[in-house]
Each structure stands twice: as structure tokens, then as C-alpha cells.
Image (cartoon, rainbow, N blue to C red):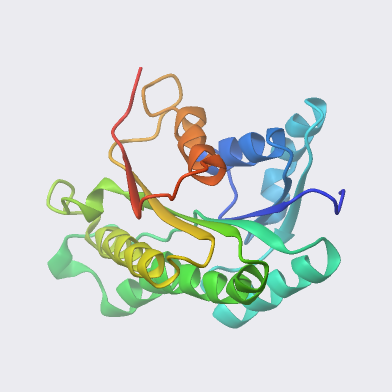
Length: 225
């Protein structure tokens, strides 16, 4: 992988949105690295992108293990280059009504859905601050806006509310540092061939990274034809 390209790190690689993000940022001349608990599961995606002349490097990392995550990010920066774009797309969900969610499962979900994002941000932030540039994009969801529409996803809704608040506070803290921070709140079900197709949503992430003006703290994606 060329070290002359800006490094885009996608945490939570897999099919769907993260695959579309990998393709969009690779097409945008980024050196894309994907983190997943089982990176071998993305072998077909790596080959599909390679057939298009695009490169994706997969590495193993557990978003629920903050120390391991920070170590994995440090290794990427040492071996490939500084992370210029951080995309946090990892999530964990325990599906149960709010009164029935086991407390330990909610905590485990939160560790991946929010704490992992913070750990990743803290790992890349010193370098971004030193360079006075960088992009941090966190995947949000409509459950952060209305958690009552899908009660079985109560634990995930807590996580999406947390990621929305984290993005807002980071955006405020880092204003003026040359670092873009935003959450892309996806207000609908991601599905190929619809207004919520992964490639359409991925374009919203790219626009936030490539925009010349200051990015908002939140982009709400409600679908488009």
C-alpha cells in the first residue's frame, strides 16, 4: 500500500455500508485500512476492490477492547502512515425490550458502540492535532432521534444517542483545530437498491471529508432517490 496516500481507517469493516465506504475512500485516493474482529470475512471484498484497481488492507481489532484498539491504530500509523480519516462504523446490539435488557449486555454494547469510538478518537487525535488536520466521522442512527419506534433495539438506541452526543462534544472541543468531526445519522434501514443504498450513504461521508467549509456536528441522512 502506498504510504503517499492519506490513510483512511474504517473500524467495523464488513458488508454493506463499511464496504461501500472502503470503495468510496479508496476511489478518492486514500489508503484504506479496515478493522474487524474477523478480517478474513472480508476476503471477497478485498478481491472485489482489487479487481477495480482499489486496495483495502484488513487487520484484526476488537472495538470492545480499548487497549487493543489503540495498539492496533498505533501499529497502522507506524507501518502505513498517519490516520487522516477515522470512520467509526462498529456496533454491537442486544435485541430485547428495555425492561429486559441484561445490564451486562447493555454495558458490553455501550463499550463497542460508544467507548470504542472514543478510544479510537483518542488514539488518532494527537497526530491530527499536531498536523492541524483530520476527519473523524461516526456512524449514527435514527434511534438517537426517536428510540421508541423499535423497542427491541433499546440497547442500540442508547449507543446511538451516545455516539451522537460524543460527536457533538468533540465537534465543539476541536473547533478551530482543523479537524472535522461529525456523525452521519442514518434515519432509515440500509438496503441495496433503495434510497438508503450503502453507496449513497457512503457519498455523504466522502462529502464531509472533502468539503472545504466547516462541517456540521451532525448530518441527518433521510434517503434520496
